[in-house]
Length: 207
Image (cartoon, rainbow, N blue to C red):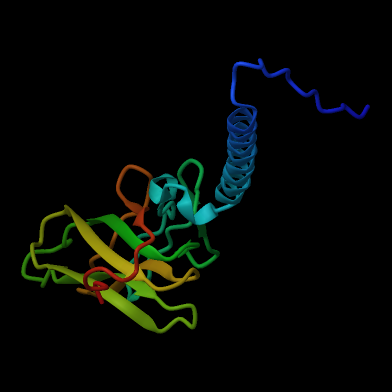
């Protein structure tokens, strides 16, 4: 249905030209308000589609080593058992966690080292939290060491800025003394990542 414009009567005591100008200005204001509302609606729709504006703090993942066989040689530690849901990251077949977004990530890893079985033996155990590029070359390392002969748990905390998605986080046992091992099981270890920011321009990268 087409609506016809209605011409409002103007009292004779009112300046007709001034009244028409006032009505015209009012019409311009209504049109401008409508157009502004339309622009705002379009801009809001664009913002709704911007995934990069969502908070990265919901990106989180955690895993543990479930192996019953103690780890007693240099290798990537098999963190292959996922704990709860993962968001913004994923567990790989090799026991690593793949980061699916760029920016600052916080990494925490805890391991349990078994005791030295006989007195007089060395107790050195060296391990690392590594961040690997998508081509599997090393991007960042956080090293840990201990020489005590008693059993102990050790936690590494690392932070790193990755420039793009696809980087991998692993815990790597680089050296362990003879007759010593790392213990598997949900009660003794964790590898956890949490996304903090998508900013890749502020500060150092943590390499």
